[in-house]
Amino acid sequence: MKNLLNSNLFVEDKLVIEDKKEKERYNIEEIKNKIILGDAFNVLRKFEKEIFDMVFIDPPYFLQLPNNRELKRWKVNSIVEGVKDEWDKFSSFEEYDKFITNLLLEVKRVMKSNATIWVIATYHSIFRIGKIMQDLNFWILNDVIWVKTNPMPNWLGVRFTNATETLIWAVKDKNVKKYTFNKEYAKLFGIGKIGANVWVLPICWGKERLKDENSKKIHSTQKPIELLKRVILTSTREGDFILDPVAGTGTTGYVAYNLKRNFVMIEINPKYVKGIEERFRAPFKITDNLYSSKKINNYVNIKKGLNGL
Ligand SMILES: C[S@@+](CC[C@H](N)C(=O)[O-])C[C@H]1O[C@@H](n2cnc3c(N)ncnc32)[C@H](O)[C@@H]1O
Image (cartoon, rainbow, N blue to C red; front, side, top):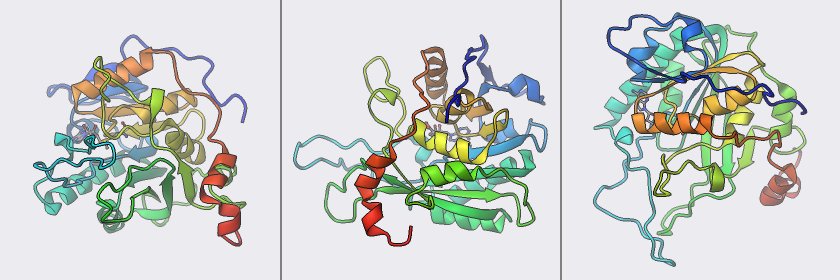
């Protein structure tokens, strides 16, 4: 586990490329370790085909939260900040499915023949995404269930507290065999002795959360560094080229770079791109500690609860 991190960290002067209509093509060297400010659907088309070893997608959820109702924490009487961002709004499932389908098609073209793809979502959309992926001939290798140790409770008490997200891990099609899978990490991160496909770790919180000058969080769905560490360490090698076409706060590239991989990220919102740039220019907040498995086992009481693992 030693020497996981990039000891040679440097941040290039020009980290962000603003995509322009008149720009027709990007070659690999000009986009390596860059954040592209632009619309993923326009930008991806300008990349050469089959260049990425791994793709991570954390797409809009289409949560469909009511706009006209505030959700209050009944004990402390404060307002729950849900995901009400414009980027999460679609007029219908049909429109959402079109977004996901087109994104997956563009991404498939730029994946190397043995590349893998991760897509993360909640119950609101993961089933639709899984169906679309299968319809597009992606071959699902696993789903990994992320169990959150600090989920937001269901304040109204009308449903189970939703403490999970699902990651689908897939290859381009059924015939792909020689993809990267680092089983020693999979074993380390998964629950129980055999390292099953359940990862237990907290949502992004505390100092890791990017905040603006008014101490408000920059992004409503920033993913934790630990989650991306697990994705990247289990499915890539040093030097690999990783794509995140809907980057948000840029967790994917941030972790990739620290783990000696290369990245390209695309994000349409200038506010988030500014946040990513500041994140890269500040001292790096990433260590080679991996989330304590003792704490995890205590939380889920795995050893007692799941026989045979
Ligand atoms: C769920 S968030 C990603 C969060 C990210 N994984 C993180 O750790 O911060 C989805 C992101 O997709 C971006 N997005 C939506 N449509 C896009 C498009 N057409 N091109 C590029 N980015 C887009 C949104 O602005 C939003 O930041």
